[in-house]
Image 1 (tube, one colour):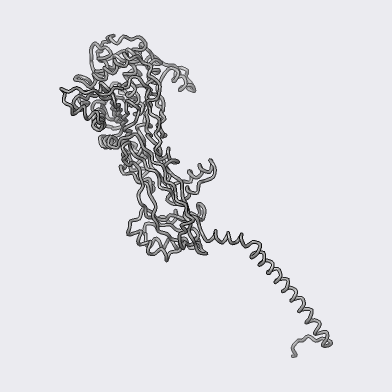
Image 2 (image 1 turned 90 degrees about the vertical axis):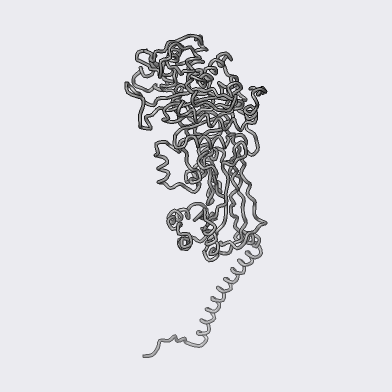
Length: 636
């Protein structure tokens, strides 16, 4: 069989076909070279500067540097919230294709990271690519060194040091100072609603305030982030730091509180496992020296994230360690409210020398009981003995609206601008309040104030609900006698002093009326008074005036008020000021389900007050001065 072949008629025909193909191929090659040459000319001559800039930008990455968070200090400069070194491991997102492999390699060095792989993989797809993923933090020096030595062998892995928030006093200031925690998706969503998201919120390890002062002044404490210019290779891996292109971060502002660390620590110590709150206020300027809530929690655990199981235990514990009982928890004030009823009576013409006979019970539609049989009582004696029958009588004479008016003037039923959130107004009942509160109730009678509700109101029970901060403001206003003091918690921000709480209006009570109720409070802590046994300071001439209170939490009916079940026990309360002659400090203590104010609350108030008085230079001089040498103490 012969092979196929092409045959041309002659040689000229064969040469013509060859020349045509040569010209076509040559033309195509020429056109290609022309286009390529033109493009090269465009890149090298016309767009050279543009690509030079892009090349430089690819050569250097700007990495965000988180600023040092501002400190939170007490009035004497004691650190309540600060920062500490934190060793951590970061993985660049540029190595996405082998991110999981890198995690497995890191897990061989840090086994605890293996359990977080799913979470870390989710974070890989969150935020921009220039933000690395933090795979481990709070490393020991040995762990940090172990990773740092191997880091050059691990693609995209960096071991570095930043700052982490620390709370040196643990739970003592947890509710008021608050804590910082990781930025959540909700936080980012809120930022988007307000405008563009600050890239710092997406930075690994960055924390924002979640409660208390940390949350309220987060913008001041946060500072301004900086940037670090890092030269990288073609795969985005860091080679060296370019110091010329770096910008230093600006630290956050320091915040100074009016609190006294020693008083706060003593308050937490006195409560121990009990539940309640203590607030101390300077009678002269409104400064809050103590605002403690017990039991508490350790805010240091929230910085790195509390395990769900542990948080559930905290949240479900009946004594509610997560609740700030100083401003959020509200309780019936019991007999600590009797000065309000007394002032309402004096304002509406009740003679302070009017005598009421106490036989241990008072009948008005039903029997209202007293804790004793006090016999004939005037205002002074009724305060000293905490006689319920006397205040039942006065309350019925003046009515609920007169009592509510005085209560509002002394600080109840309102919130105060102390710089943090979470305050509850509580309830100051009145005829108008009841109409509004029950306006949607199907029975019209529920909107009416019934006379039988008034006696309980007169002794601080019924619908009345207050918090420990309001009780402290109330006591401080009584002690001051002139000014409608406002509490102040934030002393200064970044060195700028905040307004004093004394720069407010006058109290609308005649001096003689206030003198009478204060004299009754002084009698409470004298021999025979309901608070005498546990209110003696033992500080020489310095004495404390106060008022005990016991608030029931259930209807006893005809049964006993005693119970072995914690949640069924009465609350114990105590309010006081000292010294009696020239008041400087006012205190309120609530012991949740602590039975009696004299037994449960007064001893705590005494010990906290002693700490504050002993730190006051003028009080120290008064205590140590021989009695034969009288000392002049500056008045209000």
